[in-house]
Length: 251
Image (cartoon, rainbow, N blue to C red; front, side):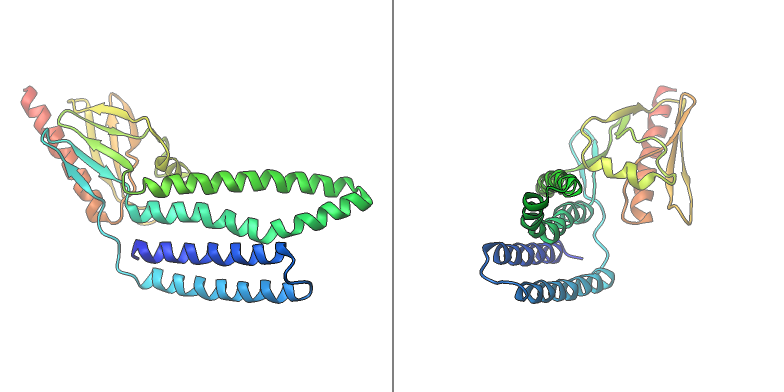
């Protein structure tokens, strides 16, 4: 799916929710007509979501991860902008849904507290405030990720080494959780091509193929978010080629 379609979908949802929220909070529309407004906006959001899901599954697969090679032979493998765009928009849209549905209830809760002074309502208001701050933080982080969506390097292959993010147990059941941190990590680990380093491809029908690396007795799966097996195979062959070149040059 094209980035423009994803962006248009996210912007449409945010505009609808913000506009409806402002209208209700302004008092222009009174109860019970506010219910009709909420229902109408909800139906439009549902239809837009169904169209987005249809476009998502019928779209042409995204292009391979961008690879840049400089004069020294260094290769930079970026996380697909398609992944970064989708993830950043999720971080912005989902909290916006929360704010849209729950923020209008805050004035009513405050009125109830002023009249009844319920401890449960005070706790609920405090939780809503914490969730509101967390939502703003998620939106802010999503915006920053969206800005740098085309510049997130996940792997660097040099002539004598390769650099990667130190995510442990990658390829296990907790892989998705660890993979999320790759969008935000800064510091990379480096492994040098030596005769003590081995690399092989592990084929897994259910969990996805992975590159297994073992150096000086320590083994791990190379953290890499790929779009298809051809892309992963390119990374694997590049590492094997430079490893063999380095070992041959030392003999």
